[in-house]
Image (cartoon, rainbow, N blue to C red; front, side, top):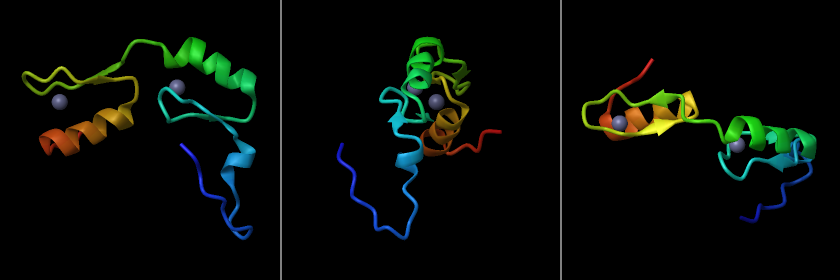
Length: 79
Ligand SMILES: [Zn+2]
Ligand SMILES: [Zn+2]
């Protein structure tokens, strides 16, 4: 995915944290080593958040993803 070149006025956060996780799209890192560590130890961990809606098998490693799922799929605000 290509990104637009931002005008100079707006700070480009990509410059500060250029290493974005391509698997979960939720993490950015300043150092390549940090991203590698994330990929190895965090990103490939099992999902920790499960949808408790009856019959639904959705699961996510991130609470925010589960929250979004609950709202969009079941119309439930999950806390
Ligand atoms: Zn990740
Ligand atoms: Zn669900």
